[in-house]
Image (cartoon, rainbow, N blue to C red; front, side):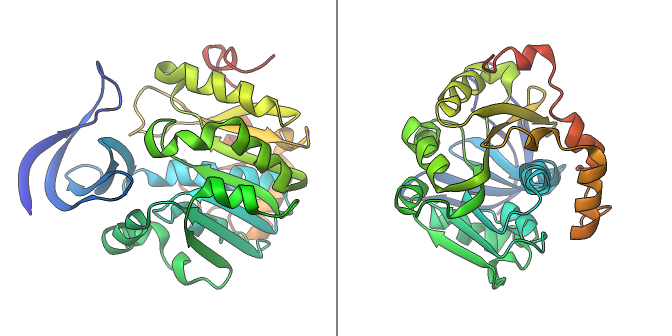
Length: 288
């Protein structure tokens, strides 16, 4: 349906952004949330969940590349990867770009997000949905990690909404405790921790929680244009304290071996290493 209206994001009560809607493509009330997809004049197609911008065709590469390539290249030998959320398929696609990944399990609670992404945002996942190394489960990520066997995964990537509504349970002690249990000895988990200029409590509180179950907790940053407020932080929780400081030469060699070097739009070996050098206004919210 063609429109000439604006959509205003509702994440913050007193500040935000708006998009000129070229055409509304879908609006669905699922069992979990309100889902809207529209075509913008500036960012291509956009998915909105409960009034909050989740992904745009224009800048999805920033978030997806940093959420995926940083942990997998830092680990260097991740064969089994668990993805929680990420129903648009972009993280799954980029996980599968790593030839060393033998199995990528994606657990998304809202099947409508997957269905609508396949129909209206097919370029984000590409052919990831049919890749034989992928296992896509419509189900509860909390329940999955609770039931998964010990040491089943080398890396866990949590692509959730903010800790409100359907995404709230992915920021609890029980979830992080089970993540630690099902990870191998060098395992790590990354998760979005909000924009600290506006959501400092999210980074601070989740870091304290993660520190209870992981000896090495920090964060790294990505500048995603549609996540307004400056840097987005991605939480880093690892059993091995060396993984967040792998030398740039090693990262470059691993990316070249994986066929990723030169194929990205945001991630580079230098950005990978530099992303862990946090501005003081962000670093102060991490555990000492």
